Length: 431
Image 1 (cartoon, rainbow, N blue to C red):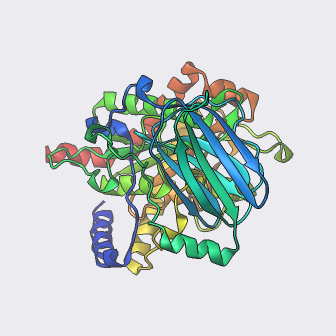
Image 2: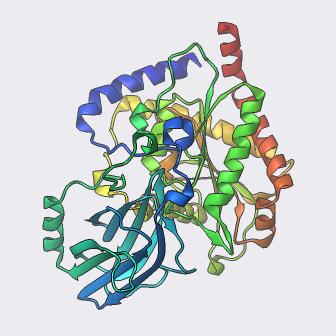
Image 3: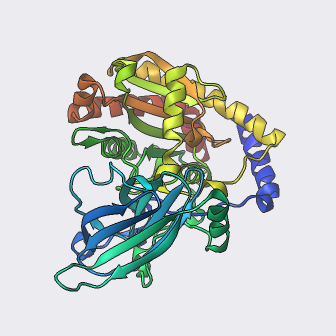
C-alpha cells in the first residue's frame, strides 16, 4: 500500500507539470451527485413528435416537429463526419425506428439526453457536408413549430475550413435562459468534500446512457439494464457503511468516456467498476455468461478486441469532438503507476471471478483484456464487467430478473470487500 501511495503522489506531480500541455473539455456528470442538477418535471419539456429527411446527396433537409419553439445550437464534426444539434431537454415521442434509416447526406441519426437539461441529435453523414442553414419556424397554417437543419455537400478542404471559423464545439445544450438549478455539474468541481471520511471510494460506472443506448434486445436496452444493476450495487455497498460510493450516472444521461475516468481520478477512487451487457453479432455464434475485462495494450482474443472497439466508439455516438481529446502524457512516472495499477486490477478481476462463478453463469473464458478507454485511469484499479449477452435468451432472462440481480450484486460486493480489506483496516486504524 505504501508503494502504491508513493506512485500516486509521483503521478499527481507529473500530471500537474504536464497540465499546461493538455487541453480537455469539461462536461457533465450524473445529476444524482448534486441536488442542483435535479431535472425539471417531464411535463415542462418541449415534445418532439415527428422527424423527417428530404433531399438528395447534394442537399439534405431535416425537419423536427415540436410543440413549442426552442433555442438550439448546430455544428459539424469530422472523423467521422457528423452534424450535431444541441437542444434544451426534449421529450422525444418519435415513431419507433426513427433515425435508423437515412437519406441524401444523412446515413442515420440518433437522439436522446446528453445531460440533465440537455438533449442532442447526432447525424451520421455520408461525407463532408456543411450546415447551410439551421432555424426554427413558428407554428403557422396548421403546422406545428419546426426545427429545420439544411446540409450541403462540400469537399474535405471546405469542410475543415468551415470548422475553423465556428465556435469550438462543447458538450452542452444551447439553452439561452437555463435556470441555475438545472445546470449540470462540471467534472472539475466533482471532488470529494474536505472531511475526515477515510473510507475507500468505489466508483460504479453504468455504461452508455442518454443518446447512447448500447446494445438493444427487443424492448430492453443495455443502458437501462446496466443502470438498474449499478444502482442495486450502489445500494448494497452503501448499506454496509464501509465505502463512499460514487456513480458516474444515476439516470439516462450521456457521459463521455474521458469524464468517466476523470470522475474516478478526481475522487481518488480505490476501485472503478464499469458495468455493461454485450451482444454478439449472429455471424459470431451464440455466446453466454459473464466476462470480466481488464486493460491491456493487446487484446486477449478477437472477441475482446471487437468489444473494446465498439465500447470505445461511445464518444463518437454521443457527438463528442474527438479531435479535442488530450493526447496521453508519455511519462515514466505514469508508466510505473500504470503497471502497478494493472496488477491491482488483475488481482480484483480474479477475486471477482472467484466470487461470481459460485452464483452466476460465467463465460467459457471469463477473464479477458483489451484496450478499453474507460479503464485507462493510471492510478485507479479498474475493471469492466459484461454481465452477460443480451443476444442470448438465457442471459437476457437473467439480466431482467430481480432475483438474479440480487445474487450477482451480492457476489460482487463480497469481492469488493475482500479486495479492499487492507484499505478498510487502514481506515479503521486511523479512526
